[in-house]
Amino acid sequence: MRYAPPGLCVNDFALLRDEDGTYAVLHLQGPWTAEFDHLRMETSFGRATSTDLVGWQPQGPVFGVGMPGRFDHQAVWTMHPLRHGDGMAMFYTGVSGLTAGGRPLQSVGLAYSERTDGTGWRRHGSGPVVEADPCWYRTGERMAWRDPFVVRDDASDGWVMVVCASDASLPVEIGGCVAWATSDDLEHWTVHPPLVSPGDVDELECPVLERLDDGSWLLLGSIGATRNFEAWTAPSLRGPWTRRGPLGPTGSYAPRVIAAPDGSRVVLHTTPRQVGLTDTGDRCRGMLAQPKSLVAQPGSAPRLEWWDGLDRWLGEESDRPALHAVGDIDITGSVEITLRTDSPDDGPALAVGCDGKNLWITGPGGVRLGETVLTEPAGTLRILTIGEYIEVYADNVFALTTLCYSGRPARWTAVTEEHSRTIPVRPIRLPDPHRDDASAIWPGPAPR
Image 1 (tube, rainbow, N blue to C red):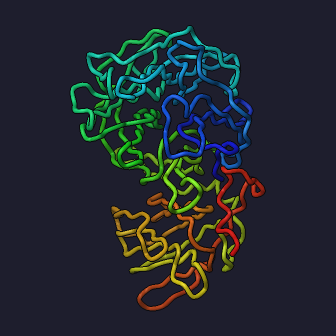
Image 2: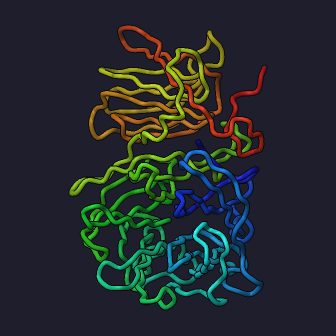
Image 3: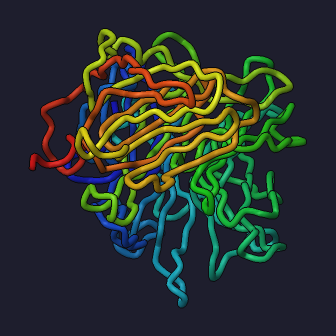
């Protein structure tokens, strides 16, 4: 249901689907720490496989840093593999060292494989294939040139690459942009001025391009300051690009789009955890979250909805306490739903509240853990809890997520101005319930 390799955290990732229907995720991996070491934190790509995008099996590292002295000898970051001939090509970020101010020096490299399962990579040469052009992009302190994503050009027989960069014409605090480059052969690239440069973003990371059914394009980009991702749409790759606003709430990051087993489009993303698995622990890189259905209709903002592929992991309705569960509630006014308590006589340790347009999640003592304002008053809420992780869907749209390590499961109780009632839940069956390493799903508080 959520995945990280044994004892490690997941950061950015890429998704593949082989001809036999098997999915593979390639992902950055690093230790449990709030301190990010640019040169030692992420030095290899992990790999895991799945048949349904929910249950993942770790398969070990498949790619690592380059030979000493090369452009990628210190760290390898976000990758994008794509089919090429009978095998695959993979673009990836290489880190060669740090600037005098301690910032990572980044460029984009290329590797090939004769396989289609995400293994067997060999580098193309010893240097990068595309670097930031100082005509348009910052190349010294506070530079960025990472997270490549490559698609077929819709205006030629070649290719288009988008990259996370820093617009040299703007102050660094608001210079986060999506750069782009073109190529006829995947190995020689021409860099162009920014494709999207909002002017109010510090870092615009992990850009993703998706061709929609009507031939238009969807661009997803992760926003560093708010730790969520936003959407842009355009009739062609060269624009004009229309900003559509947040697609995922704060806490969801680094999305990827792929076809689910039923053929529908889904989005997977990362979600953080906290060091020590406690509410007082610092945030750290976390896990791969379960898929959401991507709904993209012409002329309107895309949205993420509940994916029906999760339903087969849900049990029969029950009013018994459950740490991993999904519950639905119709709302007509203000309501607070208690999910966990410290003891039967205590107040909520975890609760979800909504008064129509305002939606929030509280922890012990009523402290707000997350909140949002909905575009329209909600008529229904769907709440999912997996260990410490909580998601809320308002009228089936993914609206809010947070973490809470407090309390013990209780009967879900909805309290309104008029009365209280028990909300039946459907327990979640975990793909790997016996896992007991640091990356296992939080099992709840220790027994007293």
